[in-house]
Length: 119
Image (cartoon, rainbow, N blue to C red; front, side):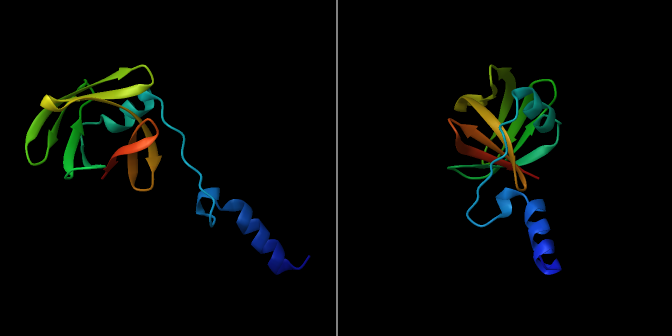
């Protein structure tokens, strides 16, 4: 086997599958405890919902937070079963699973992206 082919094969084995053409590899969903540890650090996240305008979401370690967008609302959060549940003022409760994606974390409801959080 010539050296050029060996180098190419070695590189192919080192590149994650998600970077290969036509091969999709998704990060696993974090446990709600892992998601809370990462997301509830008191610093604002840019929140881009699947529908609606972007906003800033801040989750504090103690289970509180705020959503600042066209209007501001208090937020509370809690771990409920396999989800991190957010109670956003009058908008109600959303229970999400989170996974790491390029540039941030996506919040999933039934496997579909509901929100993208990034900094």
